[in-house]
Length: 139
Image (tube, rainbow, N blue to C red; front, side, top):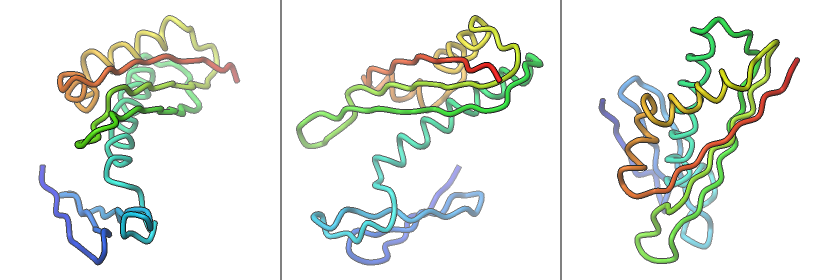
């Protein structure tokens, strides 16, 4: 994998992935930014959420479950020091579908957390306390 980060001005940067997709990252005005994009640390949460959600949806689909939607809400805490790394991250999966069993969704979340989600496993090995829970909504 490769990526390129290009400085625009102030604390605004454009990141381009090796697959050719771009995203603007910026800081808040009190840090010299113009608030034109997510903060770099927010991008880490988005990547973690995307990685985990990707796994959960794929696991459920491969199990031929009738999944209609998956929303992942993420809450994180950072240490009050420099560097201000994440200390805790919680992922809450809201999975909607027809006839979904809680045990099946629980298994998908657990497999993502413990076996498949590279971002979650990497952050956990770096000392971030990562927790997960879920709810199932019958459609």
